[in-house]
Amino acid sequence: MNSTMSDYTAAERYAEAFAKNFTIVLLGIIVTCVNGMFVFTFFKSSLFYNDPRYILYIHMVINDMLLVFFSVSLSVMAYAWPKVPLPFCVSLLIISSTTHKNTPLTLAGMAVERYISICKPLHHHQICTVRRTYILISLIWGVGVLPGLADLILFSVVRPLSVFTTSSLCSTTNVYSTPYHEEQSKITHGIYTSVVWVILVFTYYQVLIAARRASSDKSSAKKAQSTILLHGAQLLLSMLSNITPVIDKIYSQLVPTLRSKITFLNYLLTNLLPRLLSPLIYGVRDKYFFKYLKGLLSCRLINIKVDSIKQ
Image 1 (cartoon, rainbow, N blue to C red):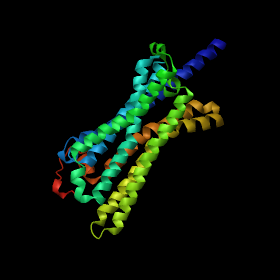
Image 2: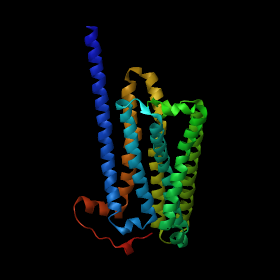
Image 3: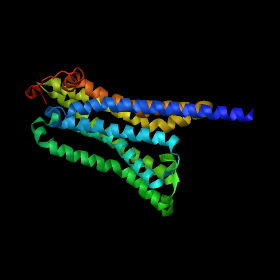
Image 4: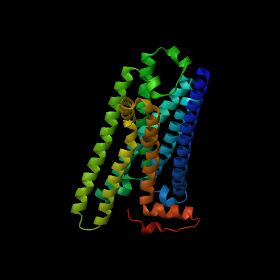
């Protein structure tokens, strides 16, 4: 009887693990396909890839697609490959950390572009060029990779180098388990979050002042205000993943018997779902992007005159 109960429990655990991984992979594929439509739409017209605002937007979309891919891969590997070689694991963690930091930094860049467009319209075409936009994206990746590299350097100092020949469960909490990493994570997260929020608040305030002072073209200023507020909402969505450990800790103490289910649901709501909603809301809200997207979905060609677009 004990053997039967043990087999039944093992079967239950396997079924639960399979269901969770299937759901995560399926949702990851859905997010990738939806975001992939925006990427395909972007490259269908020079209207988009010659505009800094759309370039930054599609960079955020592609970055979120990479984030979802590596996040889902790490989640599945936790079940299917519990002993991952440490060098390979650290590489995945650095990429995952970088893409996670890139999203709020890109949102800050998009807010600054709207600020320049409304508050310094005469200099917009000189400052916000395609070349400088790609330079900004390179800087975003450079700044975004710093926390991951700091974790690696700190890990190399605290642990003996022989640890890189070992294998372990590939997760941030398991690999970077020292108190130094916890403090470093809090500091870097605080700095990144504070800088991005200061940029969003500053740009919104400046655009708000410009909208009140403008005697003409107030609609563009008000639209820019709404856009920056949308960036704030997108930032809140992207930051949901930062509260995942807090929610897990709270509910695991309240209902310890449902810990695994709560952790799984928490991961879906705070990590995967925002990567679908954030690009979707912005892409559908933009009327030109939405027209091209509808044309793509309905297999019709929709011609939009570039001259009719107001910056």
